[in-house]
Every structure is written in structure tokens, then in C-alpha cells.
Amino acid sequence: MSVWVETDLCNGCKRCLKACPYGALEFRDEKASVLDRCTFCGACLSVCKQGALHSDIEPREVPDFSDRKGVWVFAEQRGGKLSPVTLELLGKARRLAGELGQEVCAVLPGDRVSHLCDELIRYGAQTVFLAEHECLRDYRTIAYTDVLEKLIVEYRPNILLLGATHTGRDLAPRISRRIGVGLTADCTELSIDPEEKILLQTRPAFGGNVMATIAGRYARPQMATVRPGVMEACELVGNRGQVIETPVSIREETIGTRVLERVVEKKDAVKLGEAKAIVAGGRGVGDVEGFSLLKELAVLVNGAVAGTRVAVEEGWITPDLQVGQTGQSVRPELYIACGISGAIQHRAGMADSRYIVAINKDPRAPIFQVADWGIVGDLREVVPEIIAQLKAGGSR
Ligand SMILES: Cc1cc2nc3c(=O)[nH]c(=O)nc-3n(C[C@H](O)[C@H](O)[C@H](O)COP(=O)(O)OP(=O)(O)OC[C@H]3O[C@@H](n4cnc5c(N)ncnc54)[C@H](O)[C@@H]3O)c2cc1C
Image 1: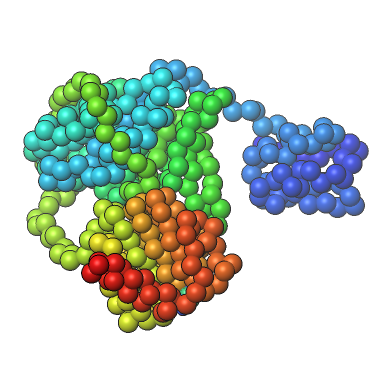
Image 2 (image 1 turned 180 degrees about the vertical axis):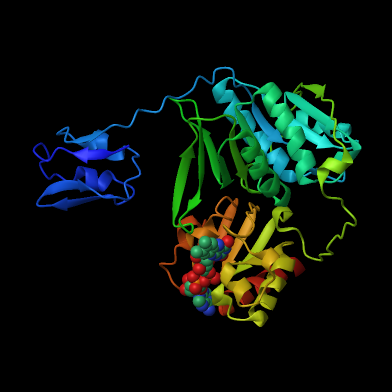
């Protein structure tokens, strides 16, 4: 494979230089020249108006995927209870399937989990593939991969969505490897390209500094994981669905792992994903005592305390309370951001909150761009004032 320049035709316009995502073109004596690092992606060819760039790369043909139907959601459950991300994904799957004119299906592996089918149907599944077996009681990579692989091969879905939970992050790459398709992890948005009718998968890239949209043209199913709390669950009234019971033939010896004990970590804190109000702090809070102030406010608004990565790194809060791209995604009714600059990586986890109040002494802090109410001031003065007013209001 090669890309070459017909130098007589090159007029030195440098369009190809701008179009090349790999910096694989340079200009010598005002003429384009292709470097060794060229990946033959072809991006330069279409922008050259002089027809000076040539290639012997055969255009890749998009296979016929007309038999690939259905937007599938992996129904993650633990101990017979569905994880919230499953219901959130069903909400998104309904919108995607609506645009494609296809069906929403949930895949539910587990042991004695049939009672969950109704809930999946209420939240949008039109078909539930129920795979029950005692070997599927606890999540184990090989057992669950086998079940999903078999169903995918048999029913040929178009799209498969999983939660970017511990389970989903383990299972999704295994499935994608087994069936030989790509996977976009940790998506924050999913949509359908109106012309090509393919899944557009948006996720932060390059350390969260840009949002990249990825499209998989050449393989099916199109696979993505989505972080909990990003999409919205939506219960449907009167949705009807069917349950297809799939036979499972797994032998314990082939699974390779056994669950010996389940250790449940005891946490006093409110689960961030479920909190209606969150008081979050960043570097501006200053120290652990500063967070005591935020806790006082959180109690008054019936909320939870959270923070930025800086607050975690400083040891002021525990890592499970970090909000953002590498922390949790939350969408409470009220998010009070105290001493937080509003870096894109933090906003990625909280920008969908219903109402955002920002307290920051820098009027140019980016957090004000997403805030519904902004208070420019020192949080050490503003927060005690809010606390005092809430207390006064409560005693009235
Ligand atoms: C790959 C990657 C992933 C990341 N993931 C995350 C993530 O998940 N979550 C996350 O939060 N960050 C994440 N980050 C870090 C992120 O880029 C920012 O560095 C971080 O969010 C900044 O935290 P901050 O707002 O607390 O601190 P700063 O950016 O330092 O902001 C402190 C703010 O406090 C204000 N302030 C100071 N004193 C006061 C005061 N007395 N009263 C009022 N305001 C005051 C200042 O004006 C300033 O705006 C990630 C970074 C990378 C590269």
C-alpha cells in the first residue's frame, strides 16, 4: 500500500497537511511529501483539489448488515436486583431503536432471575432473552461471555450496550474479542447517524480534553459501554414484551473461576448516584475542615458530599466520592459546586444535574458556564451564610 504525490500537480496549498490526522505529510520546496508514518487512512486524498495525491488503497467496502436487527442491552443484576444503569441504558436504547425502526431487547443472565423480566419490559425492553442457570448466579467472565456470544451468534443484533460498571468493563471486551468487533468504552452520548444509520459513540479522548465520536462501519454488533448515571431511565406505562427462555449448557469445570466469598463493603455515605442533592468541593475548599463545612450544608439540603479529583488526591475525601470523567457521573436535582474550577473532566460527571449552584471567587471560572446560579465570592464566607439562612428558614 502506498500514497504518493505527483509533484507537478501539487500547488503547495497545504490542504492535505491540515487534513492528515497523523502528521504524515510535510512540505519540501512548496511541494507535499509523504512521510513513513503514513497510515494510508486516505484523509488527504479527498481534500486535494489538484488531484496530486494518489494511492493504490482499495476503498473498503461496507458489508451488508441488513440482517442485523435490534438494540440490545445487557441486563446486569446482582443478587436478583437490576443495576440502575441497565434501566438507564434501556431508556437510551428505546430512542436509538426508534430511529432505526428496530426492537429493544434485554439479555438477562442469572439464576432464578425471571422476576426481573417484568421490570425490564416496563423500562422499554420488547424482548427479554432470559438465560437461567445455577452457574450464572454470580457474575463470572467466561460463563457470561459464553451466554452472550451464543445469543449474539444466533440472533445477530445490530447494537449491544453494557453499563461501564465493574462487570460491564470486564465482560464487554471479552465479548468484543470473541466475536471480533470493536468496542467503544465509557461513552457519554450515543446517537444514530441520520444518513448512514450507524451508531455514533461519543466519549472523552486525549485525557478528556476533547470529545471523540466513534462510528463502527465494518462490523456488527456495534458495541459500547456507558457509565452509570449518564443516561436517563424512563418507565413506560403499558409497554408489552415477550420473554424468550434460552437454554444454557455450561459446565462448572469450564468456567475457570469460583466465587468463594462475597464481601460487601459497608458505607455510611449516601450513594452519590441516588442522591437528590450533592454538595461538592474542590481545591478551593482548602482542607478537611473545609469539607466539614460542606457536610453541614449537605445535611441541611438532605444531600451527599462529593468532590473533584484534586479533593481526592489531597486526601480530603475518599475516592468513591469523586465526580467526573474518572469518578462517578451524577445527575441530582441540586449540585452545589464549592471552590471547583469546572474543568472539563469534572463537568463530564455533573453537567446533567438539574440545577447547578457554583460558588467560586474567580468570576471567570469555567464552572459558571454550566451553573444556573453563580455566586462570586469566598466559599468560607458564602457557605456559612447559606447554612445560617437555611437554619433560620428552618426555625421560622
Ligand atoms: C485523564 C484525566 C481525568 C480526570 N478526571 C477527573 C475527574 O473525574 N474528576 C475531576 O474532578 N477531575 C478530574 N481530572 C482533573 C481535572 O482536570 C482538574 O484538574 C480538576 O477537576 C480540578 O479540580 P478543582 O476544581 O478542585 O481544582 P482547581 O482547578 O485548582 O480549581 C480550584 C477553584 O477553586 C477556586 N477557589 C479557590 N479558593 C476559593 C475560595 N476560598 N472560595 C471560592 N473559590 C475558591 C479557584 O478560583 C478555582 O477556580 C482529570 C484529569 C485528567 C487529565
